[in-house]
Length: 223
Image (cartoon, rainbow, N blue to C red; front, top):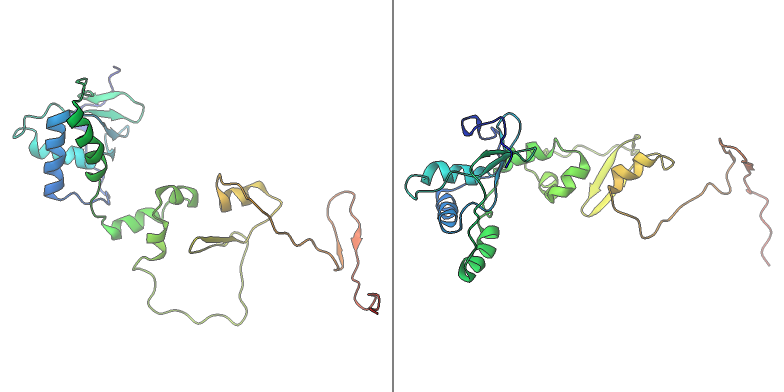
């Protein structure tokens, strides 16, 4: 076990934590730890600010004396130990079944949506998609109530990104790799529909190109 330069006295909650932790959740968290020990660490950054595990931290502070909890297991973002350690006691069959369910159900609490939306809007699109909460941004209550009139001619500029439900549209340069990364992340296309510039007056900018000519007025007659 490698010790961090941080101590438990350096640990502090993140000021913009968007997850709510009601009293009953904190009590259930504490009783779960009392029964099976610390199985998941609280994660802090190099300044001691909590990255994940606010509920575990709050539960520990509230119930450590009442339920005689062992020191909370905390690691920093390099994997070094700040406090406590993982429980080494094997689980009974009943504890296993309880913990399989509790590990998921204990995470079910409400979001502070105003704080959450503000945080989500700061994320790059590929990170936003990983959270799975992109629809909250689209449906957020801070969207203007008054919808501005649409322009007579719609205009898009290079880099504009649109998300329509599960569909995404990007105005970008199809010859550049970063365009596809921004639009698709790590996903791969199953099919591509293209519209090469045929039947227009156009001259390519690369090597080995030829001038495309318009056929207007020169198409063969149909029988």
